[in-house]
Length: 427
Image 1 (cartoon, rainbow, N blue to C red):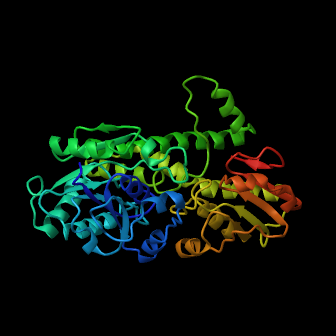
Image 2: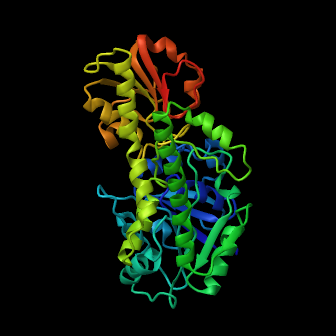
Image 3: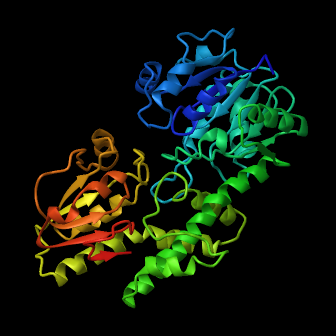
């Protein structure tokens, strides 16, 4: 495997950790169209915080020299033309109607197609519905490169399993599913990943099997979280603490430890729509999958209405009330704001006429403004609020005396169920 030269296309939460890992053993060119991202990575800094600066700097190279291992970051397609493995790790979002948006996959496939040569292998890591690699991406590669699939070039699929912000389950410690467009290529792809993934690999029989395996992983989590979210709504009506119920039920050996909350992010909140879209193309309406999505997507509105009810019970005038929202990233201890459902809570509270302040020490204010047109601060404001709503369980919030932030009749609502004292409401 000494002649392997890898290009990783897309240096985000998935691509960079993978490129860094491959670079410990191979020559790797990290490619991204965002020049700002290339500049920061080339300086040895990862603003997504997925790769520690010292780890990144230990593999960085100053040029695209293929005679030595390491990582060179570039936005120039000339630098990837001599690679023989192309790993595509671009995002796969949904549009405003929750339909799969394959634009990043199409564009990255065009980029690779421009430099594709005979014998090259293109591996996709992006989460998709079964069939996207061979039915959507491969035709683009063929059209641009003018090469024939499985004759001149080949394909593989190895779905990403990155958990943003998780420093325990890093890429090399998560078992990797692999697949190839032929049995021989499947073995090559599996060997490539197995050479750096300490947790091992699982070679699936076909690319479609690997695609399907990935998309159901997050769909399963989505449905389970939807179930406990529905339980939270029911138990709230009964004036029963949902967390207490889950702790009691969790004493059974096979009870699944899911908790209620806002379900956002680029995986759980998106992937079920990919599977649902594909199922509908085959004439099947996926009732449970879409029901879970509807329930989880409605939780922001539900939380906001519960906060308003709580404020009314405490004789707080709603219009003009000052509300502090703690957290706007999609999950705790992570700077990723993509598809965050905390935004739903904020917008609903704004619709009631409240004045919102958003404090999140992890979120980049410029990115939040660009994505959602919302102002945020990384410093805790020094004032009193009519309501404090904890939407994201960042560690920093555990060290704050939240009661000191409240007006005398103010209320504290804990969406994540991490606070022990002073809470007036929670899921």
